[in-house]
Image (cartoon, rainbow, N blue to C red; front, top):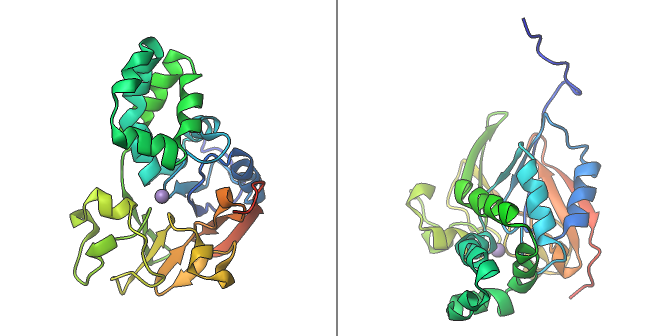
Length: 250
Ligand SMILES: [Mn+2]
C-alpha cells in the first residue's frame, strides 16, 4: 500500500496574483518569497502576457505548474484568439497581413508585439501546447471558500453588471475583463472580490505599489510592468507580499 507522502509543511495556502504581463523575473522572485510549494495553490487573476519582457517564458512556466490556475484577463483573450493565426503565420507569414484591426490594436496599442514575436520563436509543438493550454483553461472567474470566508476572483470586476442580486455566471465575458471599476464596486455583501486589471496607483498616490482595499473588494494589480511592485495576497490570512519591479516607472 502506498503511503501518503510526507508533507513539507503541515498546512497549505492559497495565493492570488494578477497582471504579470511578462514580468518573469518578478514572478519567480515572488514564488521564492512566499516559499511556494507543491502543497499550495496559486490563482492568477489574468493578464500573463503583453507589455513586459518575457511573456512566453512566463506562460510556459505557468503551464508547467500544476497548482497554478489561470483566470482569463483581456490580454489572455487576445493571445488565445490569435494563437491559431500565429501558428498559421509561422508557415505562411502573409496570413498575418489579413488579420483585422483588433489584431493590430493588440499588437501596437496593448503591448502584444513582444508576445507575438516570442510566440513565433517557439517550436511548432510548443506553439500548439500554448494554444491548447489557453483553450483548455479559458475561464473567467473562480469562487472559493477559505476558512469559511467566501471569495470571488475575477480579472476586472463586474463592470456595469455591478448590482444587487446578480450572479457572476450572468455577466458577459467582456464585462469581467475590460471595465475599470471603482475602489468599492462590489455588489456582494458576503463575498470578497479580488480583482486586478487596473493598477492601484491609478486610484490615488496613497496606493502606489500597494494592494488596495475597498469595500469587500481587494485590488491586487500593483503595476509591476509600470515600475511599481508585484503584489500577491494569501487568502488564508490576507497577508500581502511584494516584490520590487525591475521596470522603469511610467
Ligand atoms: Mn487587464
